[in-house]
Length: 222
Image 1 (cartoon, helix red, strand yellow):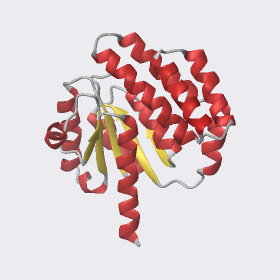
Image 2 (image 1 turned 60 degrees about the horizontal axis):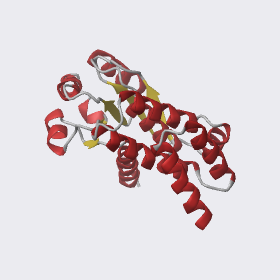
Image 3 (image 1 turned 90 degrees about the horizontal axis):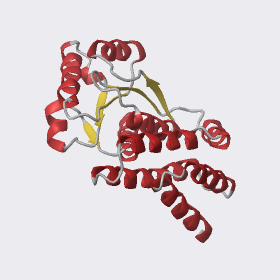
């Protein structure tokens, strides 16, 4: 147990310092020593949160955020990581349509959310970045997801997210899907304005909300 604590602390530090090679080496070692994929991703995410705070404090820049996102993707793509979570998660607990809204080309938060969601047995239909409301509607009609996830880093995406929820309402689809929005600038009041069922400023917390929704839905069926 102590070894796991030490290696996880080392991973957090390496991510925070954007030391790509060290993160990958430690991640592979952690998996080999029995750290679970979900636990590893949560550990990497702790380092990502430090990167985010350093960015807000102007110690890091957008290129550093992008680097942190690439490190996360590399950890997610490790062969042992893929084998572990895809082999044990055959049965999907729910389906999420996920995209970054129109006017925003950032995919870091979206990709991290997707990684956490997939390791927690969600099927994720990732429809990319700069997605207009018409595409969100089309994909919801096509895939009939349990959850719609919308990401946006830029502050003006609040209005764009609201447009998508309004369009769902007009199309008679709003009651068929739970809506979660993600972005560092979001608050409870902006989520209310958008008409979302939930919001998260951290991808890991966002997936925990989705897991709770699916648990409640399954209990309702029981």
